[in-house]
Length: 319
Image (tube, rainbow, N blue to C red; front, side):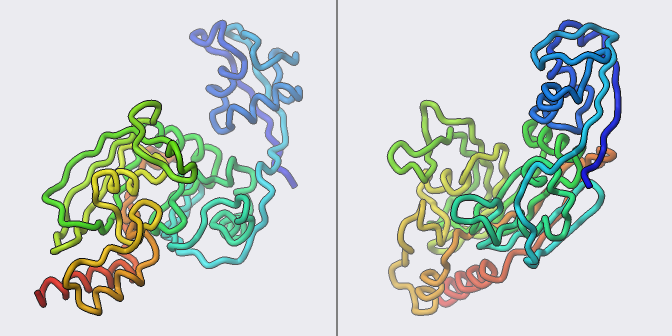
């Protein structure tokens, strides 16, 4: 049965004259503003016992009462899909997503997604916006993701992501021998011609900042650590391709596999067989929603990237 909510709060002096939905979002931070607006319209959230509109102004000292049922926000079904859970508590689920796993159900992917798997393990996620998903990884990107397990955590994590205080570090293998690390500060938006792709868009793009450093340099490739300051769609893939160092295995932004001149059969086969972007989210850090303590997690590189690096090292050693 849906959870029954019954709570109240008083409008503060500094909130005098503000919109009801804005004040409600501040006084009841566990619930999304859109959900609070619905409750206001339905008469579940009252001001001094009277129904108001979301845009109505409220006075300091007014009593807000909320009585509502916390109904499901999503209608997707749970599925028994294996997940690598790294950490779980009352507020958070941290997992190591496998490459090839789509995060959200969508057209063409209504089943077999990460959300379906999470709903099977944690049915209570159905009451959260987007089933607790606050950020995502591309289908073929592996590594750490955090999922909110409570409304408090959902609100807090969204705020941390917007404030850019969530630490996200990736490992990637790029094409070409890079001379050193740096920062790419180039706005990203929808590609002007290929609408399924993103691109560096000088006019109208959203701010996108990527920091990277060289971890290991090979004759024709570079293993890098990447830290995101912002979280735009395909950000690392777009930025590295824009700087002429696309990720190994990324057909969308890197084109066909690039085989170095003089490559031996093992290297050729390895590069051609690597069918996804060589990108892995290996470190994640955030403030825990319950107590504000800093938490960090790290996972090892997946087998396919380890094998790719071993092959590159072997090739360089032999040449």
